Image (tube, rainbow, N blue to C red; front, side):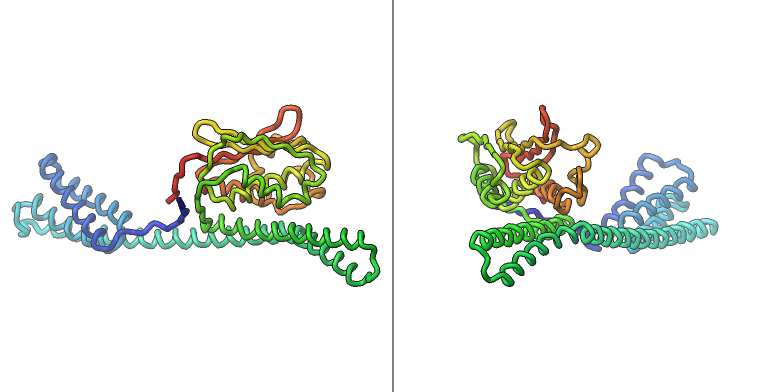
Length: 359
């Protein structure tokens, strides 16, 4: 089975529907007044029609509001102004009332439309400013992190080219550096592309039943060079059910969480992965014995570009956890962290066992 997350803007109703609702609103209001408030003063009647037309203007715009204003004047004249049930006017002063009702409604409509256009321009400007801010922050955040692996790759390649008689073990070491730094660069670029998809609402989730054990194993295989000096244990029950998810996206979540644990813990520190089922959900946890996360950072670590701890001693763009959160939300799941008893941190994510498409 396959589900896809789509983000579509609200589509306003067609014009004839807008006009129909506006006219039906005036007609319904007239019937209500005629049946239940037959003795209400004319000035209050006129004010009530003005209120109805203002609400119609706010909801449907200028065209339907003008139509409703004309119908309001007609209903007011036909049902409430003597002589009743005719459009004849016995007193000229009512003509002024009709004109005022129509003029106020049209003026209000015009003002509301101008206000709506101003608000839309303001929102557009704010979105553009926010987007520019994101781009600026993104460039500032990743510029150093992109240069670091590029420098390592360039240095290793230059040495291989310049030194033609290097011992084989040195050549192997330089080739491993090129390979690992290329993988690191690839993951950084992938994170940048993924966060832009999440920010723009274009992330697509294709859910199928997958084994968490296989996805965790695939993530560990991809991180083999980084995990070579890391004792790691896994606790995944054999009877853990298949989970509806996008395997590539959840594998990326696992990679990001493991990279985060590697980045902020000392070499040789033990890492643990465990998974279990409860309350119709599956929870996966990544446990470390690092220095932990300051309590004041607990609510911010899933923000874009935010990095906790001694940033100068770690590499990364500050996007990994934000990407994890975006992917889990798109799955209808959640992600979080807590302090580990005895020191360290536990990062966990939860996936529902029932497939819940997001519209």
